[in-house]
Length: 214
Image (cartoon, rainbow, N blue to C red; front, side, top):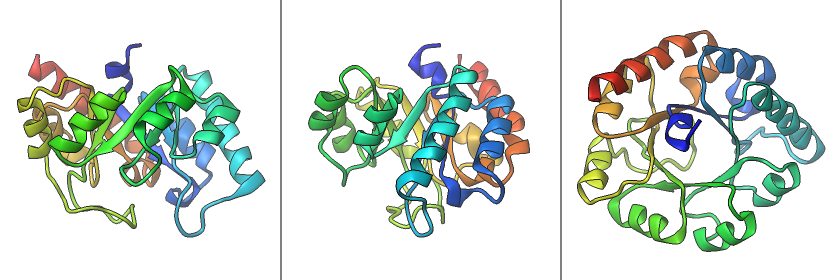
């Protein structure tokens, strides 16, 4: 599976995003069609130290069983120690160039909120961009101003050809809007972590939107 295909339905999740066992949620989500997973253990009540590493390993093994890339948010050292498939960093994290040198040819995702950040990420060695927030979300404490799908349209209009995935407040009802703007996929947190049984329905919506845009 190439990177664009892997980004179709991208689950971003940590233990605090789940109302039941994280492993149970991920297992159901993977069976429902999730094509990439990002372990994001951040914020109040997040796991640290050995419990965090043990959870990361458990979730990584589930991803491997389903042949789905396992990405770690921000923590380059953890990603290298687990031999994760890649790392995703934000604008406030370590510089893109430094992370690229550390991780070699592993997948490098970068959060971008405008065309300038997207172009810099492209020049610095990003493999894909997480663009947002698309809509209002309460999942992230440090959330930026809502951009809406138009920021994806503006990136495409400016010649950004990197794979783009929309993130922030995305659920079944607004997937099509993101895909029509030019995204390769959607990154979802609570719409799946809180209701993993909805994953298949969301995946079908992504697939249908891609078919309509061809």
